[in-house]
Length: 410
Image (cartoon, rainbow, N blue to C red; front, side, top):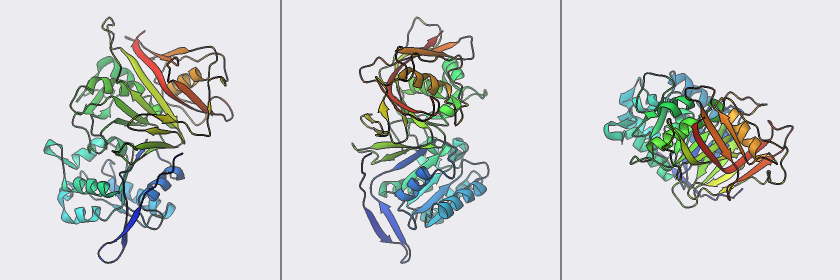
């Protein structure tokens, strides 16, 4: 783990309370369902906002159907459980859109040393008019961005993470429907992959963002959204899928030293379609040469070079595999895992790196007509798996980088 140095400057605000500014741009990308006892994540948010007794955190809960109640929960949590100096509701919601240009609200935002954007529906954040016609930031959003530029950490969970993207922003859909029908800007069908072409708040530029990732089997929809939109002016080749009760803490954003570190229960999936291509001989969607990495607690990634460093608590799996053969799946995007069982994509991928004799395996979609097959391989020159052993395969903490993935009709 690298030691990240920052400088804190005390500024007198209105002649009374000090405001602590941490230089450098920093994000905490939470995957949703952040448990209140997840001290690794919550303490990190407070620390990056100035520390215990100093942090002043603005809570943005417009994504929630009950924003005032939601905000109060996080205010209490941040102040009472994690000893921030203050946590304050930022009152720009779908029910009070006019406040996005209220000078008092802008003034309130400029007093904060950090922000937490809670979960719900990311389109409510759009509807609250944080972004105006032409995707221009409202005065409230511009004030948030100004504070971020000065060093205020921006953290989010679920919709609060997804909204940060500058690239096409996912708004719904399931993996099989995404592979079958592709990405579209709107749909009346719940399972169709939909996205907002102009993105979210435009704060994070290099990756598409998704949450509840492995828990809801969203690997397929991330691959399809990336491949369908990478040609756009704001399209990208890389995606981050953050699982529940987990966060990727990104420091020094926008510099060559931009570093992501995983904190929490599960992991972060990194999807790379930069070298991918379709097979024109296949009737339905196909994509070859996708590379997938999966990072767990303590692993780090340089967000610019995508060089990965595994936690020193983990050991290489090559030569230390626990099993002869890899597993397969007949429902590869089934995501309802539990504390004692990995979700399907993670289960099959982990078993591949933990297998002595197999270098490839696969998983099929449960839905058919067509039935898609996801093929996985660990034969790449820069493909590695690591593990921290616990009680059994499902409780072992597996990480890996640059697993080759191909998707096509079975």
